[in-house]
Amino acid sequence: MSDFDLPLSIVLGVGLAAATGFRVFLPMLIVSGAAYTGHLPLDGSFAWLGTPSALTMLSVAALAEILAYYVPGVDNLLDTLATPAALAAGTIVSAAVMTDVPPMVKWTAAVIAGGGVAGITQGVTAMLRAKSTIFTGGLGNPVIATAELAGALLISLLTLAAPLAALALVILFLWLAIRLLLRLLRGAQPSNAGK
Image (cartoon, rainbow, N blue to C red; front, side, top):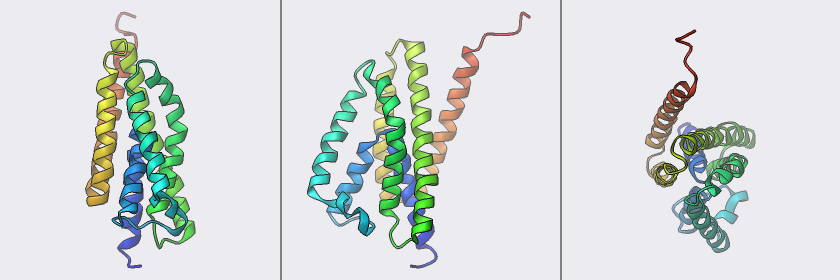
C-alpha cells in the first residue's frame, strides 16, 4: 500500500459514511452494486456486501426507506430509528471500503470518523425535519426528504468518482446545515429586548 492509499481509503470511507446520514440504505446499496459489478474493492470480511443477496435486500430496504420518508409522521419516527442505524451503517461502509488498512487504523477510523460523520449528518437532518414539522406543520418535510435523497445519491456517487470533492461537499453541507439550524433556533427563542 502506498502512502497515498491510506488517506484516500479513509476519505472514501468517510464520504460514504456521510451519505448514510442522509439515507441509511441507499449508500449501502450503491456500495453493494459497485462491489458486485467489480468497480469497488471491498475488505475481505465485507465481501458479503457485493453478493446478489445483499444487492436484493438492500434494494428493497432502500426503496422502503425512500418512500417512508414521504409519509407524514412516519418521517419523524424514522429519524428516531435512523440515528443509531446511521452510526452502524456509517461504520460498516467505512470499514468495508478501507482495504489494505491495518485493523487498528481501520476500526478507529470507521467508528470515529465513519460512524461519527454519519451520526452528525443524520442528527442535523433530523433536527431540520423537526423544525420543519413545527414551522410548516409537516408541509415542508417532503422538500427535506427530497434534499436528503439527492444528498445521499450525490455524495455516494461522487465519493466513488472523486472522494476528495465529495469530502469537501460534505463539509460544506454540514457547515450550511448548522448555520441554518442555528438561525432557526435563534428565531424560535423568545426575545429579551423588552426586559
